[in-house]
Image 1 (spheres, one colour):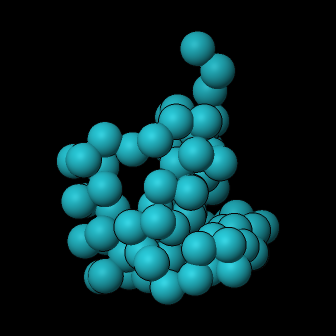
Image 2 (cartoon, one colour):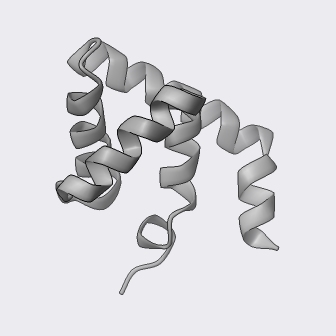
Image 3 (cartoon, one colour):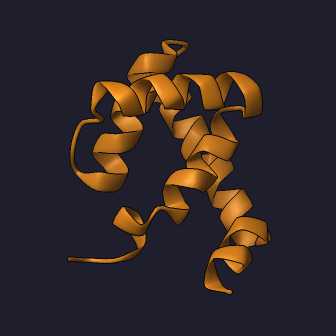
Length: 81
């Protein structure tokens, strides 16, 4: 239930759009660099090559803001191990 709420919540959409704006401001139009920066900020690590490839495809299909929504809903972002 929490995941559905986070995926459809106006609050999450708003801050995902703001996060996407920050990524564009910090690394301009380099999508791969945006992905690396997003992973660094959300997960405190760099993405593995498979994550970069799938992220590039996702962003091409759905946009950077929706990619940020996905990151905000990742278990790695929501829970501390």
